[in-house]
Image (tube, rainbow, N blue to C red):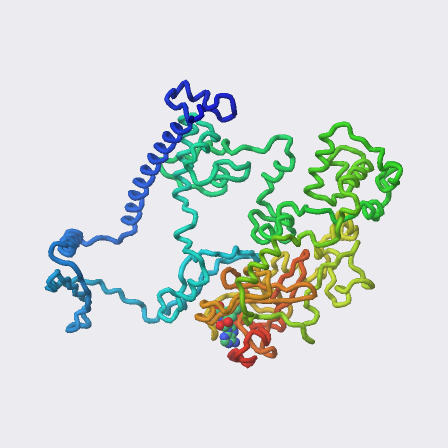
Length: 622
Ligand SMILES: C[S@@+](CC[C@H](N)C(=O)[O-])C[C@H]1O[C@@H](n2cnc3c(N)ncnc32)[C@H](O)[C@@H]1O
């Protein structure tokens, strides 16, 4: 038997039943929900049709008097389906210069009736040259990881006969326009929820129980239809009220520190190269380097205790010995919970900081941290190396078959300085004696924040000192990239499609920009896909170092650097350098000689880029 609505639990109908005694079961409630849903649906689409008509009318040019009547008459004749079943159109061959279109329609007995249609001639300025067809490329200022799309968004070059449409479509499973999220239906659902909740006093929980929407309204404080709605701008329409539904999104409990922080910072990326919201660079594959940089502890208690610095007093954690390890007892369990939460966010936070946050002596927090993370639990492997990455790589590998020619960063006599190095993994600042980066003149200067593992708080006292000193007169080359000290370029037609031209005089060593694109994790990429084959433009840039093989594709997203064309090594006036910035590899383009304003910028793409043609492509000399 259908359960009667419970009047005791949260989200019950005890307050509803007196108002609406007929709604006593969830089936009845669902019928009410569906009724409101249909009502909103109808209102929305009636409004949308009217609204669209108005917009289209507003866009139309001025009408010639009588034109409408003439047009209507003609349409009536054309649509007279009793007499005519088919039609064809042709230009009047006797009068090719006359802009006249003859429409002939045929009836079932093949009798044709012809109409002449007046046409408006639009002449195009003969000096106007249409822009060559280009694939879409939204601008980005840092590389991103695009999801591997299984649905095709649109068919590029669909109107060009020689584009292999079917070969292109074969790569996808479905059409995005058939599947993707529909903002209209989200608005209709939200308005239905609002009416049920506000007008009919039905709780969010009971609305969920009606099971009329495809996804739950409130899966958690940051999941579900209600939460998603507040992440977007909302279309205003007369039937929908943009009001207080936000309050229906539940907040994490007051004492759930981790959840509260996540709800605030969930979309904020704390990676030093990012520091922005809704990052798609770090959080998708490496969630721990996104929101919180937390994850597993990397620093042992022993190293913390022996780290550089003077004890702050007799009770300092630096003076903790074994005998003290079982003498710390915190009566209030919530103190320990707070410490655990802080450590789950930042597992290597120094005891002095922990002491401030927990209102406890540093020695006590140190001992408690040692219990939570005993030294045998502290690994020195790469915490960002998750199974996710592996899966992603595997997926890519199965999807991708052959190696594409790509712009490749190769170690040779001229470029050996710029082969990427793994971040230094030692305590303190880089030193001549021990650092490979120093030997190869790739060291981080003190004021530069290179080296993901060089944790300023715990293991790199040199960092803290240098940071206070501010930038040096001769800052590390990374700062040009970090601060975006680029020289302006203009993108315009060149000998090989579009090219990048100097807008101002440039000197040797000027920074042009950071080559950004879609970050691919696998060294293997798909067969030259039909779009590249068709338009002949390849935006892959691969670089491989000691432990890295990374690839950027600036075809789907990019910035001005994607337009630097190729020239031989002698004629090129720019070069690519691999920089290690806060532990991430970047490809910076720099001038290798002075470039006068108005001149095109060229890069030597490397031998592997032109597998068929060899390196004999030269730019024009002017
Ligand atoms: C990274 S894109 C450079 C920008 C490109 N010109 C555009 O319009 O987008 C590389 C492509 O440009 C063209 N290209 C660049 N340099 C060239 C050269 N020296 N000779 C012939 N084609 C070149 C090739 O189609 C190549 O795949």
